Length: 256
Image (tube, rainbow, N blue to C red; front, side):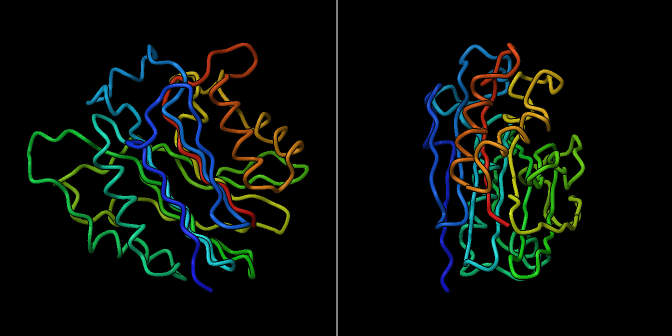
């Protein structure tokens, strides 16, 4: 079965307050937004006011295996977009996360300019629906998680303060953290940038928390598009009376 692809790049979705949600076949969906607040503190780190959305996402889904990736740049969209576009050039969904990382290491072309400040987080998940097993790779503070019935979301990766820097990181595979996971039938695998869990900019304690994500799952069930829509809208609106929409967001959701 050929893979269904969803590629969403922030440079194409720069209007504050707008949300774009799309399916990658019947089992996965993605959402992207520049955020809702053009005066948010996050705008200090945007290199180009005309292209304020520096996040990007990719979903490749062949029915059995699903590859998802999100990337979040600072100081320009180039780093995140190059990473995600390189992954989008895969001919098929790999069966090993090491092949995904090797593909990145073998083909990302950074700009030659030494003054390009753009740098990006990267979070990738690859899971097999037949076995329930998955693996991932991450650099920075974007998140991979599993949410299912009757339980709080389980974060799969460790957040850190690292970024992928153009021209400096010839071997991306040496900089990131690999991880493994299982995802049972009836659950959803999530991959998202910090515009979700820090929708109140740099205040995770007053942003979307695991209990909010679990409550949304109780309403939508394991419907990827419904859940992606609900979670992204909540991030833009804010929770418990606190501000939201204060950063770009990219969110990928797939049925386990």
